[in-house]
Amino acid sequence: MAAGARDTFRLHTAISRVKARNRKLDADLQGIRKVADKATMELSQREHMINSLCATARNAFCHTQLRMDVTQGIAEVMAASVMSSGSTGQDAADEPPVLPVFTISSRDTQNLRHKNDKAVAFCTLAQTQVSSRRQHVRHNMLV
Image 1 (tube, one colour):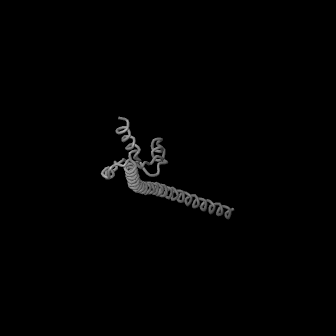
Image 2 (cartoon, helix red, strand yellow; image 1 turned 90 degrees about the vertical axis):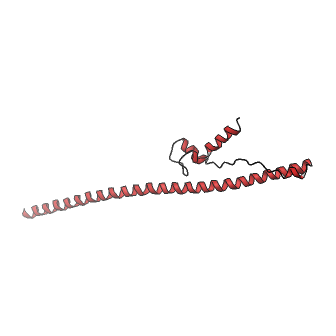
Image 3 (cartoon, helix red, strand yellow; image 1 turned 90 degrees about the horizontal axis):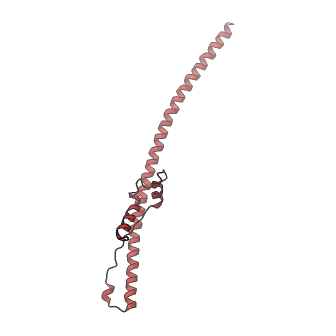
């Protein structure tokens, strides 16, 4: 009987140690999850910042390129018009009008309007330039 009591005591002791170890591991796991969640959030913020920088640079490049292409196209049309009408060369020296160019991020605009988390580059509607284009149209075209 004494041997059975010793075995029972050893088993209780072993079970108590296992339970204590399990509680410690659960606490460690909870801490690890908090750190992982924080790292995931930070990574998401950094990805959004990188996407924003890339989209801003892309829009700036496209804006410049489109402005040059439009200006060149208008100058070519004006020159062709002068040549076909037989006007003087002085008309050909006229500067083409500067037209506004808007490079907008419509996908982010839609996502921001619907207030979902799918916007990948910008945080506000103003950053998408859709509101600037809309304001220009209202001010200049709908007079």
